[in-house]
Length: 305
Image (cartoon, rainbow, N blue to C red; front, side, top):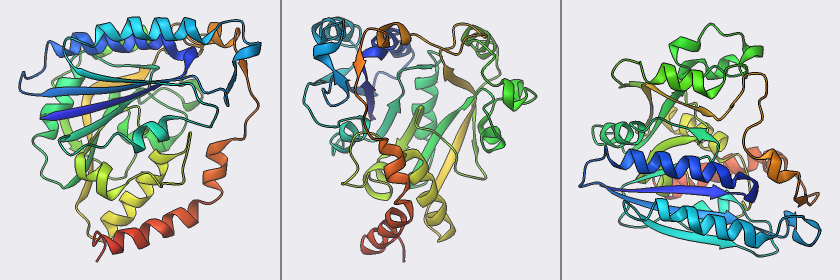
């Protein structure tokens, strides 16, 4: 199987790349040798987002570090690196819209600040091979989050944590628990719920069912959008399903339970960020339009009958 991983990185997230790439490298030792990994990595240096002339750290610092870290990936995957230095709004949506390829069987997106166990990639790929649905998503379990909508994909060890204490567990506690869990298994969900943090999608899900609207640029709630259209499609007898990979947990790097900050603030302190419109709010203000637009698209493509 051919699996493409998409990884979008802002300069202040550069230290997460070391953590992610190292975990992917360790993950590679557990993979079936017949499975081929393709990784598209983008470093976003857009001057629309960052005022480089007034920043104390030059973009060359991040470019040099980025290129050095890519060496970790080279011997087990086919890497395509992108460094965006333009002056337009650019983000993960722009990366993902251009990354579909005919030979890819499954797509994945990884958020830079996510910790994952080195066995997770193996279990995701092997689980995907067993699924017969045309359109599907596999998401790992997570730590408790801030409201009940996340409960279905929350690992049982964290179910009893109060919602207002969701960010009081450090990542090392989560790592310790994950290392001692039972054998992973798939379970279908009652509702669509995922966040694009470390999910695997079938080829048809990304390319046919839920392509990113062409007019979306930069950043936007594609995860929420795709959940809504997946729910609509399933209620209209489309073969779409979400599965939880139980006993594999992902979560943000919180190095200290009393400090939610990760490994990025010390870079942001030396970068001048421009005051730009909230792209997510703009998209959400037109959400009904985009959903109706998708319904028309799905009928045209005979996804909806």
